[in-house]
Image (cartoon, rainbow, N blue to C red; front, side, top):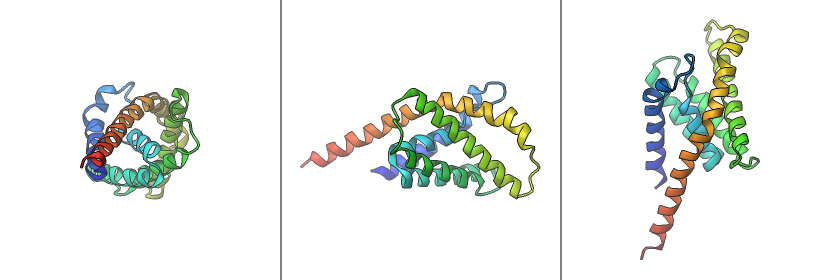
Amino acid sequence: MRAPIFIAMIVLAQVMQGVVAPHLAVARLKPDLVLLTTLAYGLLYGPAAGGRFGLVSGLLQDLLLGRYLGVFALTRMTAGYLAGVAERRLYRESLLILIATGAATSIFADLLFMLLMGATGYPLDPLADMGRVILPAALYNGLMAPLIYRAVRRIRRWELARTRTEETRP
């Protein structure tokens, strides 16, 4: 049962990023709904599933954007895996923990993205980007993280309830 949900959540995250995120823009900053869904998936399903989710969703994002194939795949895979590792150590139901985790994940993913882009020769100004883009985006993503987490948690609960119902049928 998990494969259809896995695929549906990846597609939904990509569609939301392309359709909904532009309408949520504040001062030209959009929430990274794919990253936040990857974070939530890792927190709820564990490191291996979080890494797989990040890899597939990041690769799809790379293909849709058509530039630098693999950069989003690597950043999302790493973020999903690390979120899954953190899942054992965090009290996920705390609003402040979710906000801080969302912000930290955003900073980590953006810094890794900058490192990878810099390795390809892309011109970057890390200090200017830190203050102008990375930190404001981290704040925004941190504030959005509890909403995305709760949505993914509802899907997870529905999935578990459905699995239990199917197991009890004769």
